[in-house]
Length: 91
Image (cartoon, rainbow, N blue to C red; front, side, top):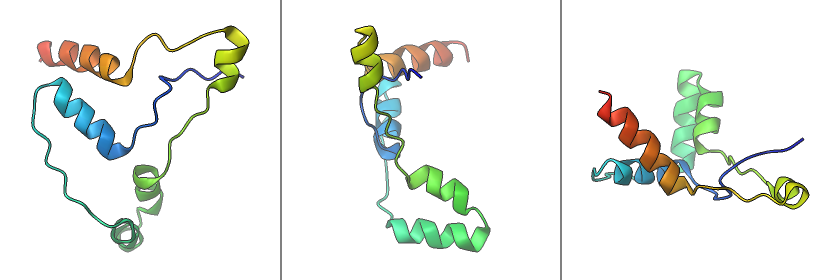
């Protein structure tokens, strides 16, 4: 099995920051302790949603890169710029 990914680990907060930067907006993120998110998830019955939000989404593409002699053609920043700029202009 081959996995294609941009080869850059990114947290949810990092993704939000990159998206804001791509559309030229300021980012205001409030630090919230992980246990607070988990507690709210238990109270609301949304534990799985919270775990997806705070969990790791790391993907190891070493096998793909070595087997296919492949490297990601775009960075996260480049991809977000293209995606968000094109969707922003269509609104």
